[in-house]
Image (cartoon, rainbow, N blue to C red; front, top):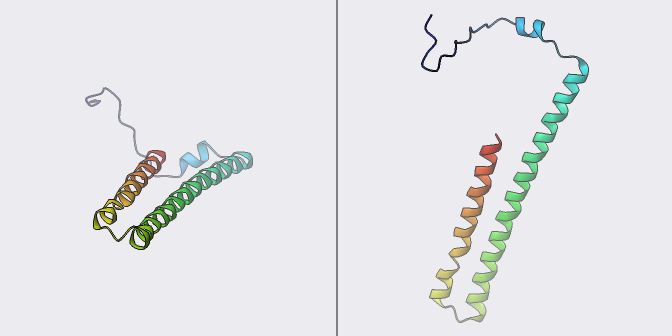
Length: 105
């Protein structure tokens, strides 16, 4: 029999429900699995909350800096263009968080 390049015997796929009969889960194991899934769900919820607060802070800082420049610093086009750093920094931080989420999944 051919075992492939890595020498590992391929698994035989069985579509029947016999796996459930071989390894039944008792009620305690089911509760533990449910709690683990809840913990994982809460972690992803916290990450989503962090991302949303990061977006809100970015909008607040960007809007505040544009207001400050336009009202108090003479509407300098150079300074207004420099505020473009804020969304770029936000984009970098947002991508970093999204990479963390993908690693976790």
